[in-house]
Length: 495
Image 1 (tube, rainbow, N blue to C red):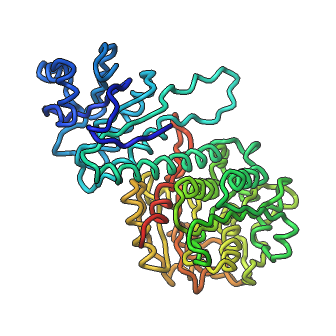
Image 2 (cartoon, rainbow, N blue to C red):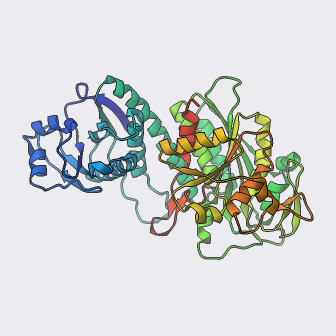
Image 3 (cartoon, rainbow, N blue to C red):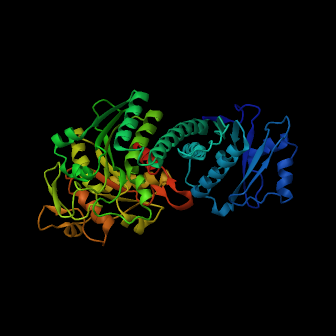
């Protein structure tokens, strides 16, 4: 899909669908008055007669308008002006995008994005536009035998800007938003695939495709013999019970200054988590195909950066495996040795994400990273603590934590900082190894982060627990693509 930012003077004469936003009890916005005059005041009459109230989520499509500047006009309700906010704007954009795609239009002119929104400049308004249309176009890669509906016809979205200064910012925002939408779509595609398709080997192939598609990306995939030589005993302990071979996927994006230290993104890639010998309850176990969303988010983020041409260096490290029960599987009470040399008593084989991440975090040291961020659907405790709205952030660096929180707010992909503390480390004590992989039920999201904290001494590190935000259950089951917007915003920010 093509996104264009244009001023009123530079815009083309006609569009398939002009999108106009209207508040409850409000008048037509200035951006729509020229259009209304060309339509003989039809829009103003509709508003005056009360045929369109402007309630949030409300739409009215006026089709077949003849030879005027628009073949169709879509009115979109913005809700009460006193409640106008970043969240309301994004909801209006989502509503508009879905309605435009349903209309069969090939071209849309968006007058909605030029209106002022609290705390949003022209760049973010435009970026949200591209992300909203990208999300609306997304289709789950299902394996149904029924014929899929045809792809939407919409090929171009044009955003009207107030002046040349906002036009320049909007062009940048649209380009970045389109890149984020594409990276988010890749993340969702990988996470939505069934575990018998999206195996560790499949993930490695997806990473290699990124390298073929983008010159700034280089990919290496390490197999189990190499992992053994590296001493990744903790990682390999998780994959003992499966026939699917483990992979360590390393994807480097080089868009920044040569020699500049990269940011390392470490993504949990458990392509199916049965719990191992500590077997999960059957209800909802199918959703454990989403347990590789951290890995998918790393690949999606790097794709977005490559499409944007972001001036940063990033290395993505993905430990990918399955966690299955068998006669060879790791048993509760087994002790394994990590790449760092530290020994771990595995008290619960369903706490496997931290066992693969700890070796990947140790591996990240060879890149001398400026910062390390791990991303994982790590704990059910995080879902209980924060629900589906916010990801959890734990960090050993106040500056890094603040940057991630700010990026989450700007990207509308929010997170909340949770504590780290030596008192929580006490729960991980073991009589038989350096420490255990679980610390009891209390504070489970925090003790999981404290486990990882033991492997990042001297590193600037943050942990993102996305267990509640990575996917939805129920009728809307599927990947959300989070936290790609947050990660890209953080990596694009000059701080």
